[in-house]
Image 1: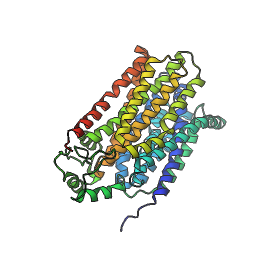
Image 2: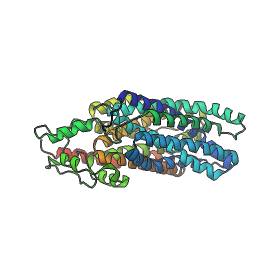
Image 3: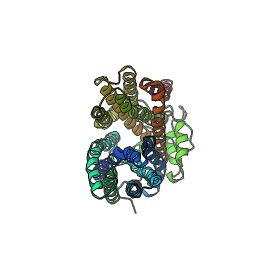
Image 4: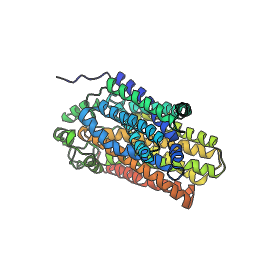
Amino acid sequence: MAERMPRRGVSLAVLIVNQLLAGVGVASGVAVAALLAQDLTGTAVLAGLAQSATVLGAAVSAIPLARLAVRSGRHVALAAGYGLAFVGAVLIVVGSAGGWIPLVFLALAVFGAGAAAGLQARFAATEVAAPGFEARAMSLVLWATTLGSVAGPLLADTGDVLGRALGLPPFVGPFLLSGAVFGLSTVLVAALLRVPRAGALASDAATSASAADPDDDPPIAPDGVADVAGSAPIAPDVPALDVADEAAPAAVADTAPVAERVGAWQALRTAMRNPRSLVAVLAIVCSHTVMVGVMVMTPVHMTDHGLSLTLVGVVISIHVFGMYGASPIVGWLVDRVGPVRVIVGGAVILFAATLIGILAAGDDMLLVPVALGLLGLGWSCGLIGGSTLLTTSVDPAVRVPLQGATDAAMNVTAAASAALSGVILGIGGFAVVNVVAVLVLVPLIIAVLRLAMRRTSVPA
């Protein structure tokens, strides 16, 4: 029996609403996680581990959720991620009420699965998008996170009041709110979201037909450059295509093994041999690493210069708006001018943000907000551009496992970046934190230059 194609508009609307709810769930819990850990342990040293536990939980769950999406569908994988976050929130409440500190930290890691599911929702958006609108669909889902990320911390105080009224310890109440929201997200996505097959894009059929017709022109990459010189979709265990092998794209598509047999790390190793997918992976990982490393130390840097928590909150709000507020514009640019150009623009913006961070004083309330706003905008360009390029530059058999592996790598490097930035700040100050962030961008710049040189070496 043929599988019925879902209505793209309905599925995209479900993803947008669900991402808003998930944003509330993640933000309301994360806003007080460090405070809860500090209150339970009595030390600020262990408070920082609360954020690390959540990020590592997201990293650990990314690959299993991708495998589940391939085996059972996107709606099952996303529902599982949000369901785990619901379980994590419940365990946090139980552990905090009983004073079981190890259970609280374990539950925070389980709670991180909600963030992993929220990240994978951006790939689900490309699978329900019309051909040529993948980046815009992704950006709309990410934009919904803006509303959730802003509303979550604002509702945290209400949740805390509710928790105290129920006799719970301080800072536990917001996790009641998170649990309720993630429970609703689980039901919503499981009941209403339908994607024909994880990793399948509407544009795949048109691309296959074009590759099979010998009279057609060579495939054109999204950024307007002929898609040769290793930029064709790649399949598992298939080396980067030779420039002269014009029939290779069709051959790859015909011989690609089923997605269930492709492991995440196998997909990642295969992607490293393709210049376009390498740029995509590095754009996501490097942009996220730079953003997290600088962002987490900015409040410490500002308070060390005597600025109030209110001003710190204003700067972080500007940063969050830069991350998500402009995402529809970034998505439109990716579809119009191509992901590679947007990735390059994002790297330039991140470099400008770190340069301002090197030169500006910690109490400069003009340059510091500008730097954090640019940091968020550069991250948006890297994530949306890289995610779109990752989705469109590989064979469907590799797509979902590679997405899971990339998200896992992104979260692992983010956890390491958050931990090491504190050490770097203590040794050399905020300027050195930004210098190290610039160095993180070097692999991405080298990969982009390698891709450009490979293209220019191809005869017209």
